[in-house]
Length: 377
Image 1 (cartoon, helix red, strand yellow):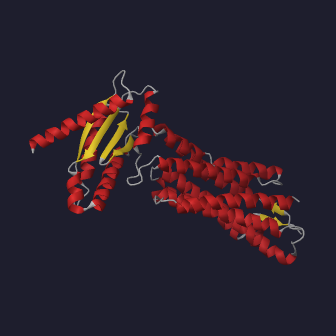
Image 2 (cartoon, one colour; image 1 turned 180 degrees about the vertical axis):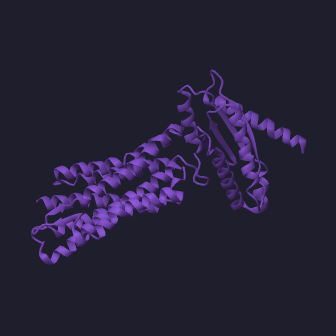
Image 3 (cartoon, helix red, strand yellow; image 1 turned 45 degrees about the horizontal axis):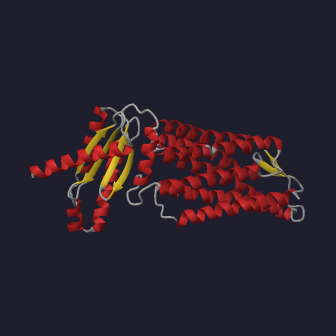
């Protein structure tokens, strides 16, 4: 009865994760984070599938000495895929944290060294049975290395989760803040698995908690993708309005809106074609993101429409002017086949201003600059 319940719960969780993977694969997602999320779902499917088949193979009506090899193999796959799942989640979390830590050799090698301990333990388990063993009737018994495995997995995932939580202090977008909080809650599933291991697992709560966690991540990912401009990957206009309304309800120190559009964009389209025009917009968005990357309080970047972009930044005059210079420098370094320049108008939030007035002031400043440039040509 217990084996049947165990298998049924894993089957339901496996099916839900498989459906999420199907929709992620169908979506038009091409970023590094989405690729890691896809691999994470695949690792979870291996994990759930192995434990599902293990529960079936150790059922009293099926288990036998001849079946024990299959059962050991399935449980080994379960442990290896659990380690792979945590490793992929760590890379996924770090890619969303956006500091590039996992691109550095030292921290990457340290994580790989730590995760190799439980993986190696699972692979050599048939020689020493330190990780787990099976009783004469297929009873699963954990060995001393299981505690080491859970400690390593919890340490690695908690470290990445803490970095995500610290990242929240500089994240201005409330939608993305909720998204990062959901990702950061993943180690709670590992902690639950560890705690439950001391009191037994007659009901597979761990797979349910992981499935719910992945479902929350999936739903947050979908919501986040709706808020993004599909071409440039920055926020869209609708999300921009929601963000500004959110900020105006707080009491920001100093807030600027930078309104910018691409100079002679029509000429780029007419001369090089609309695909080149799209490439120009992607370059501009990247130049803006790179210019904003090192600021203490991360600015909010959005595509306002057409070739217009907006940056909302809570900073002082000096930092705002430095940001404009970095955007110009990044665009100047873009290279062939066409030069890219943007005109930037800015407006500072004044007492009594609402969102529409703030954008109108930035837009007016932008067109003053553009008219002055046209008059000078």
